Structures are given as C-alpha cells and as structure tokens.
Length: 214
Image (cartoon, rainbow, N blue to C red; front, side):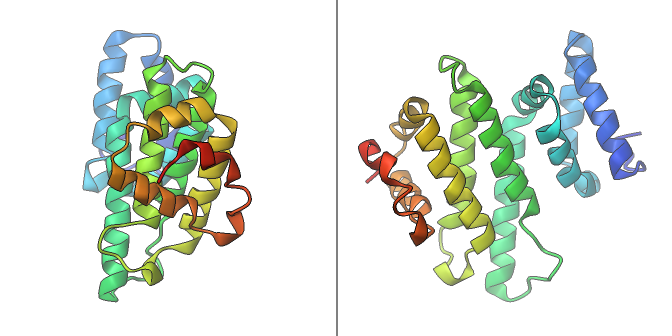
C-alpha cells in the first residue's frame, strides 16, 4: 500500500511508524523496512509523502526516530541537499513559484539536531557525530551555497540553521569541536558564514571562539 502511493498522508505516516516499530523486533522485518524507507526518499512517485514522513520521524519516540535515521541517514541528507540545490537554482533563474519551499529542509535541520542532542552524552556512538555532521552539511548548504549570491539565500531557513548551530555548540562543545576539527579549511570557512548569518547573534556566538573555526 505504501509503495503504491495510494494512501493519504496521515495513513501513510501511521503505517511507516508501525513498520519501524516492527523493524525493531525482527531482523527480517528490518531488512524490508530499510528497503521501504530508501524507496520512500528516492522514488519520485512518493515525493508527496516525504515532508509528512520526515515530520512523523522527528515527532516519533526517540528509539523509533533514531532507527529511522540510522536506516536512511545519508539518503535523507541527500534528499534535503537536493531540495536546497533545486530551490536556489529556481530562484536564480527566476522561475521559483510561491509553492516552492524549504519546509523539508527546516524539518531536516530540526530532526538531525534533535538526534544529536539525544546522543550527545554517548560520544562514542558513531551516530552522535554523524547526526551533527549531517546537520552541519545541510545548514552550510542553506547559508553558503556554492555559486549562489547572498541576496538569494533563504533568510528564514538560514536564520533557523544559524540559531540551532549556536545552541548545539554551546550545549555540546566537545562533540561539536570533534566534528569541526575534521572539516577542511574551505568547510570551516563556510561554517563561519553559517555562524555569522544573523548579525544579531554575534553575542550568542561567543562560546564558539575556542573552536577556532577560521
């Protein structure tokens, strides 16, 4: 039913969450659910479900949310970054429509930040650092996209990304510093752009001085 794309959004999300819960109990089910989740975020025919599905994952029980992100992490990240590229390309070409939005990206930012905060005390958990790394990749793409002029940057999404970044860095300095330390010089420069996206946040950004992003 889910793969056919015939269900309503609410029904689809309920089936998805139920499937994820079953995947926790059975390896066989987990294999099938993994394939289903990959299909959801790659098949164009199911694109209409992606935003509500991601929101359902973010609002689900923490163990269900982490399972879904573990299964589809890089696929989800790729989907969000693709949305960003297409959004800015349309904006530059002057063909963006009022219906075009960055809603999937804002949900992605909040979801990966939530996952990182859940795992911040388990620094040896690979998913902890992966969650932060994916958040940073998406956030930097929002505020410092390559080849896109500043005037085209989505201010709402950029402000959200910057404000979440400051909170994560202040609340979880050690794992944050660990991920930032692995970035290239170019990525650190783009990260600094993200940090400074909203001038009013200059004071709040003080705790990040010791990270020496530049």
